[in-house]
Length: 185
Image (tube, rainbow, N blue to C red; front, side, top):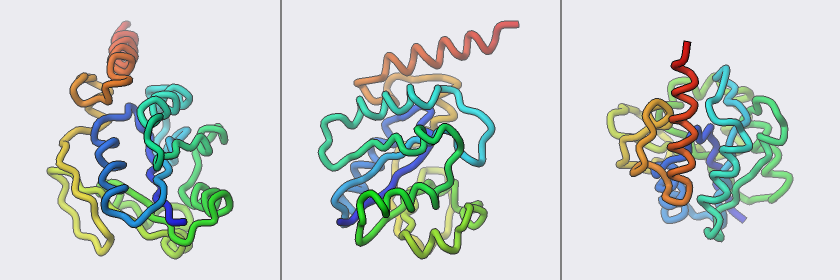
């Protein structure tokens, strides 16, 4: 079995995430892609949407896709989880012959700072997702994404057309409510 791991905050999940999953399934020689939402990214201090809500959104989004598994591994841990821990869990659970680890090009400058990076790069083959406006040089495999959207922008201004249809209104309502509450004195 060959797998790809696609981790992230998914705060919120957007159409770019769906395109990454679809392109990975088309371009990588894999049996499944495992989408792993973080409880809290080890490089961040907070999240906007609670972990279990982000997990629920992802499960709804990918419900009908047979080759997509949404994992609650990091959320169940109830703490920031390092990529190396997730990779070791996936290795134990699936016993794959090959693991691709999908990252955004914005992660490249700090990739060497990831916990146990030397061991991690021996266990996985990194795949970098490029975005318009980001310059990068990499020796890793790439997936080109043409959607210029980020979760950061969508948290500030949730725009329905950039969100997966099945959860779009739920996401818009959540972030609008959160933003209103944040602006109150």
